[in-house]
Image (cartoon, rainbow, N blue to C red; front, side, top):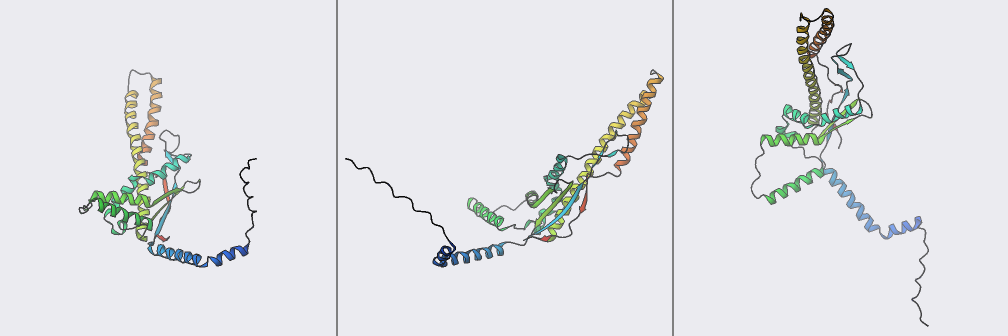
Length: 278
């Protein structure tokens, strides 16, 4: 009679681990635990010491609901509903490279030592050091002197990296903040971004009004010719004359609005100084 393999022993009964067991384990491993805690404290202190001071400045914008409508019965600028997509579009405009380039050029940030020398956080510093070592290893020759265009491009990238723009909840308010190792730089940059956005909005409205004015001007000339056309009946001329008068009124109002354009946003708060965040 063959005998089969022995049956495996039954699994041990699960035992509850009590508070006493935990204290006993901690007592047996007190040296290892103490060293781990000490190492963690030292590393934390080194990390805090390596982290440069960081400042953040912020502004707030309120999106305006008024839009140009040259064919409305009332004012040229009319109140209109703003969709979520419209607000998000303004957020993207504020984040755009065009706004960043305008600010870099206006403040000459490519030549601003405080702005360009900002090392960022410890992780950024480590990345920069590793990148520098790799570059030196791959290129034995001396690094080329950065060009003005290169500094400008680097400044634009740095600005966009440290700029934060976001909508406040579901409101029409957009918050803008910029962080830097220099509180004055943080304040100047975020205020300049806000100003550049407002100026861009004014320019866009002036351009829109100018196109509307040009179109109305051409249409008025055509209607003027028709009003004076002797081959048309009195009734036709009356209808054309009414249209002509309406267009002439809209033309006058649009030209007047060009001298005082309305932006699509207004500032709620300007940054006064950068506040320390780290």
